Structure formats: C-alpha cells, structure tokens
Length: 227
Image (cartoon, rainbow, N blue to C red; front, side, top):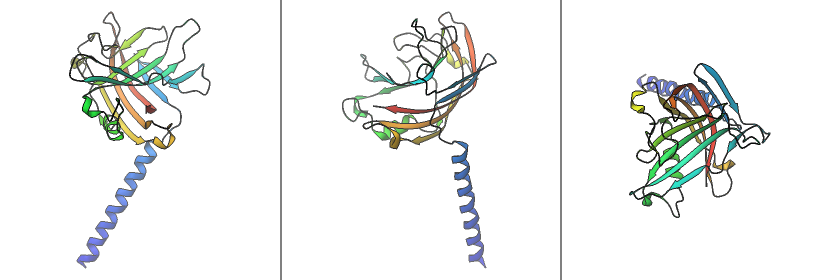
C-alpha cells in the first residue's frame, strides 16, 4: 500500500512538471520577427520587424562595440537595435536600443576577444538585470530611445565616455527582466552565437537637458547574434 501511494505521488509530480514545462514553452513562443511594445508617457508604441528594408528593421552593424580603456577591464557592449530605417536626410526616428554593458577581463575571452558560448549564455540568462549608471564605470543594462522627432532619451549615459545624466538609484519603478532565453545557434550564421530573448522592462529615460519620460510595460522579443 505504501509503495502504491509513493508511486502515485511520483506520477502526480511528473505530470505537474510536464504541464509546467509545456506552459512555459507556450507562453514564450519563439517569433521569427523582432517586436517591441511599450507605453511612453501613456502613449502606446509598437515596432515590428518588417520584410521591407526601408521600414522597421533590426540593425546588426554594429551589434557589438568593444572599448579599450586604461582600466583593468574591457567595456564590451552588446546592442539589440530595432526601429525605423534612416531617412533620406540622414535623420533617425522611432528606434530602440537595449545595450548589455559588460566589463570583461582579458582572461574571460577565448581568443582575439571572442566570446565562449558559456559566457554568452551567462550574460543573457533568464532573470532580473541591473541598469548601469554609466557605461564607463558600471556594467549593466542601458536603454536608449530615439522618438518620432529624432530626440535621444537614455536610461543612463548613451556613450561610454560621458557621465550619466541622472541618478538611477532614485527611479524605484525601473526593472529589467529576461523572461525567456533560448539557444538559437541552429539559425545563426557560421561563427556566431545566437540567443532568442523575451524581455520585459520599465525605466525612466532622460535627454541631455535632464528632462525625463517614462517607458512602461515594455516587452521586447529579439534574436541577438554575436560574432
């Protein structure tokens, strides 16, 4: 009788785990096209990657920026860029950039600043991430938004050599969570690592004058590749 009861409990546990896994896969279905939804000062914003190059697109060049400085680490920034293509007059509008600002030691690279799959997955692992105050002094996540008028707004300093425009520690409403992260190398070019990401975030963004806007309930789905 005791054996049958334990078998029954194990069977129930197995079914529960299976259902949980199925629910997780269903909730975060992988989409081939990048997309972004948010509210900025209570105005809804939607960007969806288009097959038309002149419309909304993912910008892959450069998707990575390495900054060598005099410190004992290298600033290695991985950028997820989605937005409208540059206009004929050279202006840029309605573009989102999510930067993963990494401070790596030389020993963390495989060779010639190449990233191992293990380190790649660690940076882009599921869970909550911290925002950076400025790229030069702190690793973390940085958000940039170019609005419909071409104005740049950023969660911290948009460039690694500048100081932050705001003290983000006072922005208690900020959060950044990678909900789902999955190896996508089978769809990548030779020599690259790719990861499918489903991200939720919220943050206050600042312009160069110190004025601010709030990006709420943001959701980004993106396939990021690194060379």
